[in-house]
Length: 144
Image (cartoon, rainbow, N blue to C red):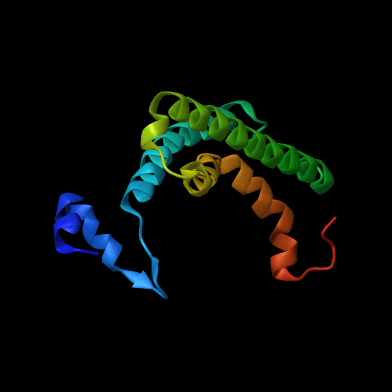
């Protein structure tokens, strides 16, 4: 790559020099696309997580562990479904209006930010999981 072309590409042109086995390692425009998508998804994730915490059944130690397992499973399935739904909505909206500026599929990487933020907003889900698996951690034979 000649020096003139590198200078014409601006400050991010320097990344074209960082290669492993002849392949460019870091793509700044793609990294920027991932960052934008992650920021949008984190707002959606926190909002959805907080809403689920508000509307899902709270931890109740009078319920049996199988009942809590069903609640946990349904809540996690809902989180996964809503994560997928919002990822698709945001990705398609961004590509519709800013498609020429988006490179690759940044939503695949950005969605890694969403699930933990959704889970982090749901204290009662953690309480349920902790209660159900507490015996497993303590290696007691009477889990149910």
